[in-house]
Length: 178
Image (tube, rainbow, N blue to C red; front, top):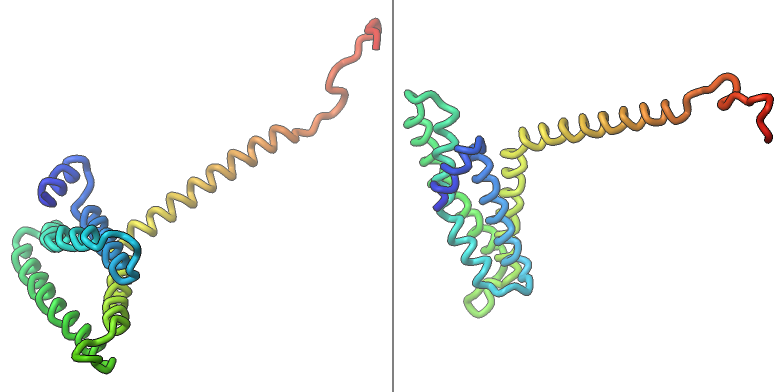
């Protein structure tokens, strides 16, 4: 499904990076719903987590676009190593953080898991901002340029509205009855 969506978006000039960013936002949102225990049926965010789990394959397409064909396989191999290493580090880190709380009846408290996964979501948000920074910067520039154009057009309208007039606006006619 993601491959089909990415292919259709690419035909419209939208790269796989955009789809990957959208999927990341959906994943982070689902995790926040679970962490904050929002009043939503729990099956919905968990289904979303399961669906976006396959999105890591999009990262291979993104990396392949940034490297010449002769290096794409090496770059994707390095990315694959990063995927596995990061999965190991995240799971180990969550275990270390959860273990900071004392176990109660053989189970760790809910707060331990919320803190551990909250830290993970925080890192994901930071990474998403870093990933999207070029788009955010371009959006900011375009937004500021649009504001400047709007400001210039307002100034031109105001200059027209407050144009100084010398002499009478309407010439009086000697025979006019005022």
